[in-house]
Length: 112
Image (cartoon, rainbow, N blue to C red; front, side, top):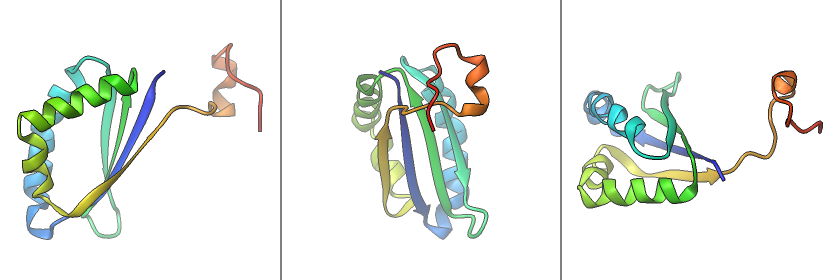
C-alpha cells in the first residue's frame, strides 16, 4: 500500500543555507530510489526555518529500506546536525481522495 511521509523540523539558523544546498544534492538521488513516488520540501513563510517534507512511497517497506540506506551511509547523522531538535515524522496511507478530483478517478470513494 502506498504511503505518505510527513516530516517537520526547525533548522538551526546558521545551518539554513547549508540545509537547502544539501537538499538540492540529495533530492534527485532520493527521487531515483526504488519505490519513491516523489518528495517535496516546504519552508515556513513566517520564520524561514521550519521545513516540512512531503514524501510519497510505493510501500512502507520501500521507505524503510531507503531510510536504512541513508542511515548506513551517514547521511541521516549529518542531516540531523542541521536541525534544532529532532524533526517529527508521521507515516500515513490514503483515506480518501479530494472530491473535486473524483470525476478523474473511477475508483474514487463517494464519501464526505
